[in-house]
Image 1 (cartoon, rainbow, N blue to C red):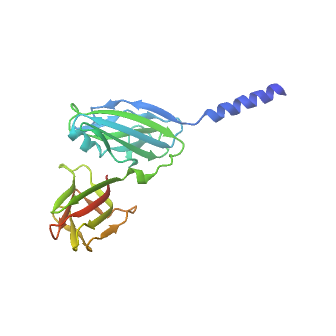
Image 2: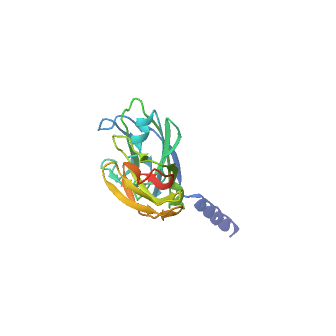
Image 3: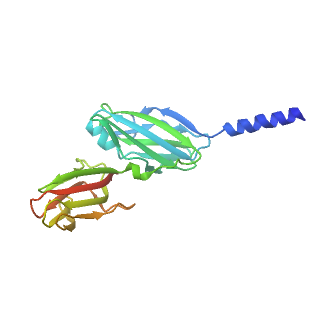
Length: 240
Protein backbone atom coordinates (compact mmCIF):
# COMPACT_ATOMS: atom_id res chain seq x y z
CA UNK A 1 0.00 0.00 0.00
CA UNK A 2 2.80 2.40 0.90
CA UNK A 3 4.53 1.60 -2.36
CA UNK A 4 1.33 2.37 -4.27
CA UNK A 5 0.90 5.72 -2.51
CA UNK A 6 4.52 6.62 -3.25
CA UNK A 7 4.00 5.93 -6.94
CA UNK A 8 0.87 8.12 -6.93
CA UNK A 9 2.76 11.00 -5.32
CA UNK A 10 5.56 10.72 -7.88
CA UNK A 11 3.03 10.63 -10.72
CA UNK A 12 1.25 13.71 -9.42
CA UNK A 13 4.54 15.57 -9.05
CA UNK A 14 5.51 14.78 -12.62
CA UNK A 15 2.09 15.87 -13.86
CA UNK A 16 2.38 19.18 -12.02
CA UNK A 17 5.66 19.89 -13.80
CA UNK A 18 4.17 19.44 -17.27
CA UNK A 19 3.25 23.05 -18.00
CA UNK A 20 3.28 22.72 -21.80
CA UNK A 21 5.47 25.81 -21.93
CA UNK A 22 8.16 26.08 -24.56
CA UNK A 23 10.97 28.63 -24.98
CA UNK A 24 13.07 28.48 -28.12
CA UNK A 25 15.33 30.58 -30.34
CA UNK A 26 14.25 30.35 -33.98
CA UNK A 27 16.46 30.55 -37.02
CA UNK A 28 15.73 32.92 -39.92
CA UNK A 29 15.25 31.77 -43.50
CA UNK A 30 16.18 34.44 -46.06
CA UNK A 31 15.01 32.55 -49.12
CA UNK A 32 11.28 33.22 -48.87
CA UNK A 33 9.18 32.73 -52.05
CA UNK A 34 8.74 36.51 -52.40
CA UNK A 35 11.89 38.60 -52.69
CA UNK A 36 12.52 40.81 -49.68
CA UNK A 37 10.53 38.67 -47.25
CA UNK A 38 11.90 36.57 -44.41
CA UNK A 39 10.45 33.57 -42.59
CA UNK A 40 11.38 32.13 -39.23
CA UNK A 41 11.83 28.43 -38.73
CA UNK A 42 8.79 26.54 -37.44
CA UNK A 43 8.21 26.53 -33.68
CA UNK A 44 7.39 23.02 -32.45
CA UNK A 45 4.10 22.57 -30.62
CA UNK A 46 3.97 20.41 -27.48
CA UNK A 47 0.43 21.40 -26.55
CA UNK A 48 0.62 25.18 -26.21
CA UNK A 49 -2.22 27.30 -27.59
CA UNK A 50 -0.67 30.71 -26.88
CA UNK A 51 2.26 31.73 -29.08
CA UNK A 52 4.53 34.73 -28.59
CA UNK A 53 7.38 35.88 -30.83
CA UNK A 54 9.83 38.58 -29.82
CA UNK A 55 11.76 39.95 -32.79
CA UNK A 56 14.92 42.03 -32.57
CA UNK A 57 15.77 43.77 -35.83
CA UNK A 58 19.14 45.32 -36.68
CA UNK A 59 20.75 46.69 -39.80
CA UNK A 60 19.53 50.24 -40.23
CA UNK A 61 16.40 52.35 -40.38
CA UNK A 62 14.81 50.65 -43.41
CA UNK A 63 15.01 47.30 -41.65
CA UNK A 64 13.28 48.68 -38.56
CA UNK A 65 10.39 50.44 -40.29
CA UNK A 66 9.42 47.58 -42.57
CA UNK A 67 9.60 44.73 -40.13
CA UNK A 68 6.83 46.32 -38.07
CA UNK A 69 4.44 44.86 -40.63
CA UNK A 70 5.37 41.30 -39.60
CA UNK A 71 2.73 38.79 -38.58
CA UNK A 72 2.41 35.35 -37.03
CA UNK A 73 1.27 32.45 -39.21
CA UNK A 74 -0.28 29.14 -38.20
CA UNK A 75 -0.62 25.94 -40.20
CA UNK A 76 -2.19 22.52 -39.75
CA UNK A 77 -0.05 20.78 -42.39
CA UNK A 78 3.17 22.86 -42.56
CA UNK A 79 2.13 23.81 -46.09
CA UNK A 80 -0.88 26.17 -46.07
CA UNK A 81 -0.33 29.11 -43.71
CA UNK A 82 -2.81 31.63 -42.29
CA UNK A 83 -2.27 34.96 -40.54
CA UNK A 84 -3.38 34.71 -36.95
CA UNK A 85 -1.65 37.35 -34.86
CA UNK A 86 -2.08 40.55 -32.98
CA UNK A 87 0.90 42.68 -32.00
CA UNK A 88 1.66 42.46 -28.32
CA UNK A 89 3.80 45.52 -27.73
CA UNK A 90 4.66 48.74 -29.46
CA UNK A 91 8.07 48.89 -31.12
CA UNK A 92 10.95 49.78 -28.83
CA UNK A 93 14.04 51.43 -30.33
CA UNK A 94 17.05 50.98 -27.99
CA UNK A 95 19.29 52.78 -30.49
CA UNK A 96 19.32 54.05 -34.08
CA UNK A 97 19.94 50.62 -35.61
CA UNK A 98 17.91 48.30 -33.35
CA UNK A 99 14.20 47.72 -32.79
CA UNK A 100 12.36 45.18 -30.65
CA UNK A 101 8.72 44.16 -30.89
CA UNK A 102 6.60 41.23 -29.70
CA UNK A 103 3.78 39.49 -31.54
CA UNK A 104 1.24 37.03 -30.19
CA UNK A 105 -1.30 34.53 -31.48
CA UNK A 106 -3.79 32.08 -30.01
CA UNK A 107 -4.70 28.88 -31.80
CA UNK A 108 -4.40 25.10 -31.83
CA UNK A 109 -1.85 25.09 -34.62
CA UNK A 110 0.68 22.25 -34.74
CA UNK A 111 2.96 24.59 -36.72
CA UNK A 112 3.59 28.29 -36.08
CA UNK A 113 6.12 30.75 -37.45
CA UNK A 114 6.55 34.50 -37.94
CA UNK A 115 6.62 36.10 -41.37
CA UNK A 116 8.88 39.15 -41.57
CA UNK A 117 9.08 41.93 -44.12
CA UNK A 118 12.26 43.74 -45.05
CA UNK A 119 13.90 45.59 -47.91
CA UNK A 120 17.24 43.86 -48.01
CA UNK A 121 17.79 40.29 -46.92
CA UNK A 122 21.52 41.04 -47.12
CA UNK A 123 21.69 44.04 -44.77
CA UNK A 124 18.89 43.30 -42.28
CA UNK A 125 19.32 40.84 -39.45
CA UNK A 126 16.77 39.34 -37.08
CA UNK A 127 16.92 37.47 -33.80
CA UNK A 128 13.68 35.65 -32.93
CA UNK A 129 12.68 34.27 -29.53
CA UNK A 130 9.59 32.07 -29.21
CA UNK A 131 7.53 31.34 -26.10
CA UNK A 132 4.40 29.17 -26.01
CA UNK A 133 2.03 28.23 -23.22
CA UNK A 134 -1.47 27.10 -22.33
CA UNK A 135 -2.85 30.61 -21.79
CA UNK A 136 -1.81 34.21 -22.48
CA UNK A 137 -0.16 36.19 -19.70
CA UNK A 138 -1.88 39.11 -18.03
CA UNK A 139 -0.78 42.17 -20.02
CA UNK A 140 -1.38 45.81 -19.19
CA UNK A 141 -2.12 47.17 -22.66
CA UNK A 142 -1.90 50.73 -21.32
CA UNK A 143 1.84 50.25 -20.93
CA UNK A 144 2.22 49.75 -24.68
CA UNK A 145 1.09 53.28 -25.52
CA UNK A 146 3.60 56.02 -26.26
CA UNK A 147 3.20 59.61 -25.05
CA UNK A 148 4.60 62.52 -27.05
CA UNK A 149 4.64 65.99 -25.52
CA UNK A 150 5.75 69.27 -27.04
CA UNK A 151 5.12 73.02 -27.01
CA UNK A 152 4.65 74.77 -30.36
CA UNK A 153 3.81 78.26 -31.60
CA UNK A 154 3.52 77.58 -35.33
CA UNK A 155 2.16 74.88 -37.66
CA UNK A 156 4.14 71.75 -36.80
CA UNK A 157 4.44 68.11 -37.87
CA UNK A 158 4.20 66.19 -34.61
CA UNK A 159 4.60 62.61 -35.85
CA UNK A 160 5.54 61.22 -39.23
CA UNK A 161 5.95 57.78 -40.82
CA UNK A 162 8.57 57.74 -43.61
CA UNK A 163 7.61 56.46 -47.05
CA UNK A 164 7.19 53.72 -48.15
CA UNK A 165 4.55 53.33 -45.46
CA UNK A 166 4.70 49.99 -43.66
CA UNK A 167 2.96 51.00 -40.44
CA UNK A 168 0.55 53.71 -39.33
CA UNK A 169 0.15 56.17 -36.46
CA UNK A 170 -2.96 55.52 -34.38
CA UNK A 171 -3.78 58.31 -31.93
CA UNK A 172 -5.76 57.22 -28.86
CA UNK A 173 -5.82 60.45 -26.88
CA UNK A 174 -4.75 64.08 -27.13
CA UNK A 175 -4.48 67.06 -24.76
CA UNK A 176 -4.04 70.66 -25.98
CA UNK A 177 -3.44 73.68 -23.73
CA UNK A 178 -3.27 77.38 -24.50
CA UNK A 179 -0.33 78.75 -22.57
CA UNK A 180 -1.28 82.41 -23.03
CA UNK A 181 -4.24 84.57 -22.13
CA UNK A 182 -5.91 84.13 -25.51
CA UNK A 183 -8.06 81.57 -27.30
CA UNK A 184 -6.21 79.16 -29.56
CA UNK A 185 -7.61 76.93 -32.30
CA UNK A 186 -5.78 73.72 -33.20
CA UNK A 187 -6.54 71.87 -36.43
CA UNK A 188 -5.39 68.25 -36.72
CA UNK A 189 -4.23 67.58 -40.28
CA UNK A 190 -2.86 64.44 -41.94
CA UNK A 191 -0.86 66.28 -44.57
CA UNK A 192 -3.73 66.72 -47.00
CA UNK A 193 -7.02 66.71 -45.06
CA UNK A 194 -8.18 68.35 -41.84
CA UNK A 195 -9.35 65.66 -39.42
CA UNK A 196 -10.61 67.76 -36.51
CA UNK A 197 -10.55 71.26 -35.04
CA UNK A 198 -10.47 72.21 -31.37
CA UNK A 199 -11.05 75.62 -29.77
CA UNK A 200 -8.97 76.02 -26.60
CA UNK A 201 -10.00 78.72 -24.09
CA UNK A 202 -7.38 81.17 -22.85
CA UNK A 203 -5.05 79.62 -20.24
CA UNK A 204 -7.04 76.40 -20.42
CA UNK A 205 -6.91 72.93 -21.92
CA UNK A 206 -8.99 70.63 -24.09
CA UNK A 207 -8.62 66.95 -23.20
CA UNK A 208 -9.73 64.14 -25.52
CA UNK A 209 -9.24 61.13 -23.24
CA UNK A 210 -7.62 57.90 -24.30
CA UNK A 211 -9.91 55.11 -25.42
CA UNK A 212 -9.56 51.57 -26.75
CA UNK A 213 -10.49 52.93 -30.18
CA UNK A 214 -8.17 55.36 -32.00
CA UNK A 215 -9.18 58.95 -32.64
CA UNK A 216 -7.17 59.16 -35.85
CA UNK A 217 -5.22 56.87 -38.13
CA UNK A 218 -2.66 58.60 -40.33
CA UNK A 219 0.88 58.55 -41.66
CA UNK A 220 1.53 62.20 -40.77
CA UNK A 221 0.12 64.08 -37.77
CA UNK A 222 0.18 67.86 -38.17
CA UNK A 223 -1.05 70.46 -35.68
CA UNK A 224 -2.00 73.77 -37.35
CA UNK A 225 -2.50 76.82 -35.10
CA UNK A 226 -4.81 79.75 -35.66
CA UNK A 227 -2.30 82.15 -34.05
CA UNK A 228 1.42 82.16 -33.21
CA UNK A 229 0.98 81.53 -29.50
CA UNK A 230 2.60 78.96 -27.23
CA UNK A 231 0.45 75.83 -27.18
CA UNK A 232 1.18 72.59 -25.34
CA UNK A 233 0.19 69.34 -27.06
CA UNK A 234 0.35 65.82 -25.64
CA UNK A 235 -0.40 62.87 -27.92
CA UNK A 236 -1.05 59.29 -26.77
CA UNK A 237 -0.40 56.97 -29.69
CA UNK A 238 1.06 53.74 -31.02
CA UNK A 239 2.75 52.70 -34.23
CA UNK A 240 0.63 49.82 -35.53
